[in-house]
Amino acid sequence: MDPSIIPALYQPLSVDRKEIRVLEIIGMGDKVSCNLRVVSLNDNPSFTALSYVWGDANDKVPFTVDGRPVQITRSLAAALRHAKEHWQKTFPDGEPDEFRLWADALCINQGDLAERASQVQLMRDIYRSASLVISWMGHKDADMISLALSTISEIHSVTKSLTQAEFSTLQWMQPMTSLLTDSAESLPGQNDIRNEKWAALHAFFQSEYFTRVWVFQEMLLGNKVILACPSHLLAFDIVARVCENFAEVQRNIRDGHAWLAGFIDNQSTASSMILFGINFATLSWLRIGRQIVREHPREECWVISPHGNNLKATDPRDHVYGLLGVANVNIVPDYSPTKTLGDVYADYVAAWLETARTKDPGSWEVTSVKDRLALLPQFCCHGDRRRSRYTIVGAEISQELHLPEGQLERKRLPSSLWGL
Image (tube, rainbow, N blue to C red; front, side, top):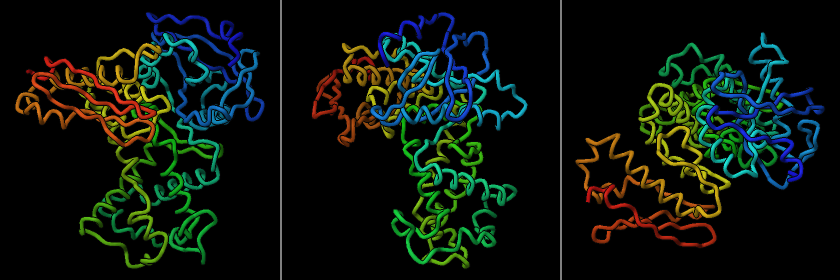
């Protein structure tokens, strides 16, 4: 963004009033522009929150905010063109002029490190307060994503009244010939997949969207979440329910408690996708996570935070900061250049230990220091699968971090946290 227009777009926000900016969407389709408005979360404003993958930072398109030209990623531009339309489909009685959208790239002054840090601390409040969270699956492969969502919707319509045991028989699939009939050859660009609906489902579950740490938090916190692409939308709870049922089928078959229905050809795409081609457990775990967040106080959700290591983040500090809204770990985000990545990880582990000791004292007291080492969060950065290593030397515990570009950093942890 042109630095010269930042002061005009971004006036300081009140931290005490929990102020955020929201977008007023003007127009629809290709003629969309936005105006920024400041609201206080203390006033319970009505707004929708956008969850999306930023995409290629170099692939930007022109956009207009408050009458001024800015550059935003193509992914965000596509989401802004369709957000209001999907909101209206979800809330058909809503007044279009009342639609407000929160999208981090525009609603946070990304060049102000202090504001970024303070807004990160509000992520829980933002996504919990939003009347709707639009999980934007992206504009790439939009036809495949649309077909996947419509296929999941079709499966749900047929199976929504079935018990888990009835679903697991897969007898409901027999009339659905479009899931059972394969083409003679593999579809273009699809290795050994000969059915377009299964190809779409396969692409859907491999979407980059589900791999991002911020997305994981946003989907766990949202009260009402829809998955959307340009031409289709579907409630996340419906998607997760279908996934959970398929995941149970996979577990039963793997454990030898069930088998594929006789009408499903063992050489078919349906057979390979149901057995091992799609990891349905990914989204069923998200549903469990949402249930944990809804039914348990935040103080009990600290155990979720290490899951951030299994997800992707453009900024490796966000393996920690990207889940602070879910987990009650006492850390203040700090994006300043003086705060090294090693500092962030060491602070997190220390805070995690303190939380573990205070929130679960019973199990903490009966485990040895050595056993506690195995429980500590592990971190990997930018595809480097080497993990943090924790060692005990005398009364000192050190954390060895493998950082980007081959850097190695060692940090001492307070021995008092270990009861030494």
